[in-house]
Length: 146
Image (cartoon, rainbow, N blue to C red):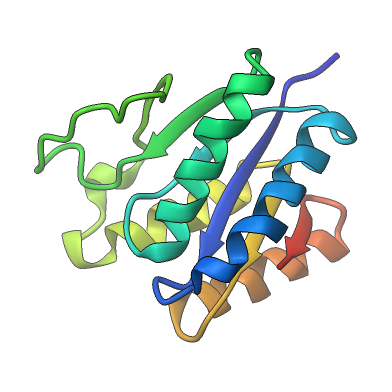
């Protein structure tokens, strides 16, 4: 069976009320869709909630891998968070201006993931979800909105 990957995008202002539906979505992605690799960012409340949900999920599903998206790996030292399997720095990001690193890293992940779990707000997270939904219409990714 091919390894399936999932990325998360959401508003930095997401409410903690999102934890339960996010937990259910992660379970579904593991059990029904066969996702084994999850990548999440580290900025904002949605990412924080998603990291906690993934660490809890890994206690029940030891075969999943959890990776931290690290768009500033070349300029900022970041330690791998406890409970994570590693960190990920997208190819080609070294040529992107720092102010655009997160936007480009997120776009890379949408282009290279099988699934996206999203709770978009406004701005870049909303734009990225709209981009992912266009890719979904072409059968390139499956988007779950919370």
